[in-house]
Image (cartoon, rainbow, N blue to C red; front, side):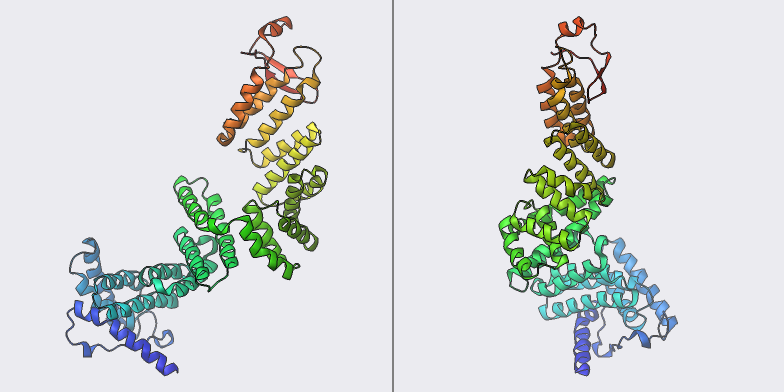
Length: 464
């Protein structure tokens, strides 16, 4: 069986290089003798004949440079092939450029080959170039990604093999995976599911896997506008591809049965709660059941955070507080900031303004560029200000402090500007009148301390 397999390989290689021989003007095809490649049989980096290896590397590189300088258009390619092929078979560990350039060389031959049978063998040769590079120079995850891209381009019918190549590449590269590889990995996953070679749940699993990688890279490149834009485009492409499978109805249908069959599978519970929360299906009963079960089996700040949000959405603020306080030990900074913000919302609804403000400020300590906590504090001031006064002036001075927070909100976070401006318009018309300000011996523009629980310094302003 092994001998037969090797024979097939040698036949493929021989046929693959028919075009090489033709283009390099090697008229005597019967003189081409292919040497079996085995790393253990090679004598060091330059093989058994180091002088010939160095000579052929130098020779093919010189012609390759000429070809490249012409933007891969002149006839130097005809002189590249013979010495390159010799290096490929006789000193495969000589230089990694043998494989970097080899991809370009063989791809050129594929694109210019008219005979479909020979072209098919050349594609096999191209795949062999990738495999041999992995064998001698590692970088398996990265190279598999490139191999998968070329195979997908040249043989669309081999999508199952491409899927497995991409899958292995992403498993190895993880957060180092490139955007295009992730996009095509997801597309081949969908293709596999459409042809019943995978289940719909595999689409969701792959989406979950690559979303983590994308989110990691978006966060890692937040200060690099060019890279950030590229990753945001990748994210948009993935979300668009996933959209047909992302409805709450579909996700519930996929995961409900799995949950019922394996209610104690912690990994499954984490996957269910994460994907349902991400796709805003967190009001579904499955999300509730899976979250509670996950917390029972593995109490953690992350699971407490999910349950706290769930109770908050059900307007059960007292129970939400218990879980959100436990979530304050969560490691993820975004979730930590949100847990404090949700605590602020709970206390706001429970009419405890000082504690609501306290947690809104704690949220800002973690994430100072989020405008929502400022909006919330402004609302606290605006809705309780009258209770802190006993005359025409003091019943309205809290509106000054409220507007200060709305101005701050849109300054740090332009995404809340519309909400902030609406609040500013609403409260500004309720500022004390100019007459009231003069009556209490105040002037516009001077500092004023709003007392009561607010206890903040603001600026005197008159209603316009």
